[in-house]
Length: 506
Image 1 (cartoon, rainbow, N blue to C red):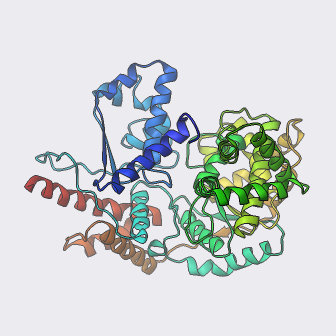
Image 2: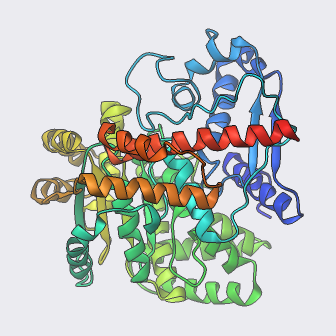
Image 3: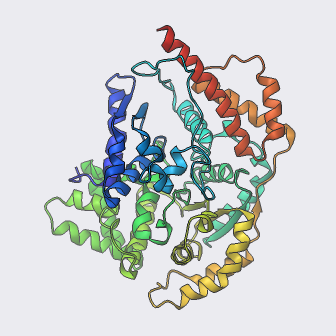
C-alpha cells in the first residue's frame, strides 16, 4: 500500500472497487447521491473541490482507471442545477452535465457530453438497470468507443471496427516510423476540423507504435485545465494513460505495480536502476535520486513506487527544479522500459491542441509552449511526436509562436531542454498531414460499422426505418464525429426504451 489516499489514488481505488464487485459475482455498482444540493451551500473552495470530484467521476467513467458496470444517480433540488452557486458556476462540470444552451460562451471540447436518454414518462426505474457485460475484451473496447462517441469525446483505443479511410495515409505513417528508426526525433502535425477524425487517426498510429514495440504516451488537452505547462503535474497522467507493448497491454502504472509487488521483478528493477545510475544523462540523475531515497527508508519498495509514480510531484509548483525533476523521471521511465521490456523510443501523441485557444490564458499558453518545446523540440532521440490540431489553431499557433516562444526563450527560468527555438523552427517547417475527408460511401460504411459494434455490445436494435433514417443522417452530419454521435444517440435511445420496457414488465 502507498499509504493514505490522495485525490488521484482515491479515484483509482474506486475504479478497482467496482472491478472487485464484478469479480465477486455482482452485476455492478449503484452509487446514489441524495440531497446533493448541500454542495451549493459549501464555501467556495470546498464547493469547487466537490464539483471537481463530480467532474472526475464523469470523465473517468470509461477511462483506463475508471468505473466498471457502475451507475451514478444524483438527486438534488433545483439549487444544485440552476442556483447562483450551482453546477453552472463550475465550467468544466457544466459542459458535461448541463444541456447545451444552459450557460453562455463557446463550449470547449467535449462540446456535448450529454446524451438525451430521458425514459418514457410512465416508466418507473427499477432498483438497478440491466448492465450488459461484454464477454471478451474486444467487445469491451467497442462499448467504450460507443460511449465516448455518444459523449462527443475522441477515442482512446485503436478500434478497427470504427475506423474508415485510414488506409490512405498509411504510407505517411510508414515514413514517420522510418525516419524515427534513424534515431532522429520525428515531429509531425495532423490537421483536421474538430470531429474530422484526427483522434481516430492517432489511435491507428498508436496501434502501429505498439506493434513496433514503442510505448505510447498521450497528452490530451480535452481536460479543461492548464496542466500541460506543468510537467510535475501532468506526468502522472501520461503514465496512467500510457499504453505499453507486451503480451498484456497496460499502462506504465500497471507495469510499475508488477515491477514492485513481486520479489524477483523488484530485484531486477533495482539492479537496472543501479546500472542506469552509472551512466551519464538525465535518467542517471533520477536513478541516483531514487536509490538514495530507498536507502534511507525501511520501506524501499514503497519509496520506489511513489517516486516512479510521481506521487510526490503532483502538488509541486512550476519552478525550474521541479520541472527538471519531472523530465528526468520521464527519461528514467524510458530507460527502464528499454532495458527491462525491450521497448524502443516512445511515440508521443498530443491531442486536442486547439484547446490552447479555447480555454488557456496567454500566460498559460506560454507555460504550455514551454512543455511543448521539451517534448517536440528533439529532446527525445528516436521518438515520434505527433501534434493534432485544427487548421485554424495551427495558423494561430504559427502566428503567435514567434512572439510567445521568443518570450519563453528569454525567460531566466527556462530549462536548456525546453528548446523553444527548435519548436518554433519545426512548427514553421512541418508539412501538415491532413485528415482525409470521407466521401459519401465511406460515411455510409462508418454508419454500418457503428451499427455492428453497437449491436454486439448492447443488443441489436429493431427499427424498420433505420436504413432510411441512417441515410438522412449521412447527408446531414457535418463531420464524422457528428455522424457517429447522431447514430449512437439514436441507437442508445432505442436501447434505453427497450430496457425500460423490460424493467416495467418485470
